Length: 450
Length: 165
Ligand SMILES: Cc1cc2nc3c(=O)[nH]c(=O)nc-3n(C[C@H](O)[C@H](O)[C@H](O)COP(=O)(O)O)c2cc1C
Ligand code: SF4
Ligand code: FES
Image 1 (cartoon, each protein chain N blue to C red):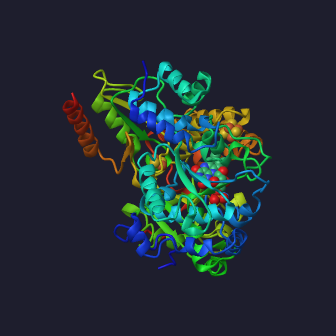
Image 2: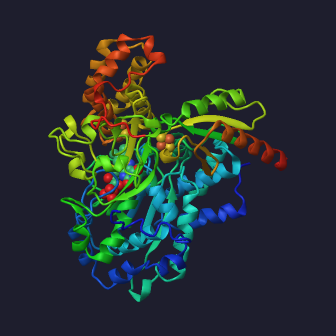
Image 3: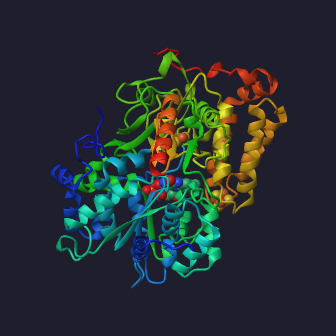
């Protein structure tokens, strides 16, 4: 069993409610933090090496230290609970089952950043979760952890929950800020960065749900101790939401020292592939990160065992590696069609493009159309190159990273599964009734686990 | 005339108080949710009413209502089946579920049954990939869908509709 810092109490009966949560040691980090100076808290978070869990992996302490502090201007903390990246459902788990853990982390972070009004921006479809969060907020308030003069510290803090209304792009931090201001979710051109001009032009920090929950163990243990868990720059624990063709889909906390192979096959985690099938491919960090064929998933190109941490997952760059991303782990077995799966992702990004930049708006539409043609046996060989060309023209040429997020999955699918695309073109009839199968990407272990 | 209930008006006031003075436009998304809850969809009359409540221009409301996928700017059935069709759900059989609902209700994606009870929509990843296939029905998710479960959900909706009439 690996170390658990976030989900260790997830199965305690009634942990969703204040009394049980408090009895289990909840809100100790707030007690501790309120005796520290905000600068010291930021220092602890820096020492912990905690990296943003929303996808980009930017060090949280560093981000906090960038927040501008102009005289007399209020600052805000905004919790990003938009969670819309296909394959990702870990923040939902935290909020549904451990709402007080998030509220506790938010209070500490709000104190460290000087945010008297903190907002949780949650995707609109999670329509039942605001009630859970508001219940936790009310309980925290009734017990003196929120509101005016928290625990006699002189610090005032309110937390508000705001629902989005169905737009993946609002997970991008500047689009989220626009949305919070009551506008369309069009990302802003940076700079200025939110740390200088965020919501209502005030200095703002946007952090992911899991990042903010992880602040609790960081403060409880001290940054130094936290940094000893994990390996290298992958400190602490990470939540992985696993889905697709596995026996045990769900949310798992890992301490970043286990291998990808163990994660897939161990009964403690995914429990292997159902029906004795072999693993074909995996998207290890949410739909935006490169897909890897099985032979590159368990071992890096150098032949080293691939581990479930930031560095190892990205070992080999985009040529032979992928990314930790948001921790949305999508497994495809030998019966899945990579072209078709990529098509659903292309459709997703076309649907979610905000339409501000033409490479993204037009490019995502073209990619979907071409993929649809190839998938249904109407594609030409030159379409594969055209697809490659389009994704390259999107990447790096847009206001926000959604363009890249749309381009990368297509690029990686062609890079690693080009023969499957070609097979579709060469077998326009057959591809309608049959799948290409495994070919040479077979599970590197060559073991059939049932 | 679109008009919020007293209770909703109080809620609007409470929401506006969350933001700095003069930033009441920030309440737009939450207030549109309230409006949709009460009226089922957002007509231009409803949107104008919301603009008035928040003291913003009607166009600011239209812009937002048309941007976000959860706002219905046309009437929809009493029960909307929003079935996820993105990759992770597809590999767990969402296509079969969508096909089955189409057959069972005799409608295509995007249509409403003639009795006005059901609308079928496909949506993109709802953050339930590990519990696929799934759909959203009102405030909640229905997960691990099977044909039998779909049957039961349809029956449940019909019963509820009959009980409320
Ligand atoms: C298109 C797009 C969608 C994103 N969606 C999310 C999201 O749903 N949740 C999230 O925490 N971060 C998301 N991000 C990343 C945020 O912009 C931001 O980096 C993050 O909230 C920072 O939090 P962290 O440093 O704690 O990870 C998204 C980014 C992009 C470009
Ligand atoms: S890259 Fe796409 S989503 Fe991002 S701002 Fe441009 S059009 Fe909008
Ligand atoms: S893909 Fe359907 S809920 Fe994520």
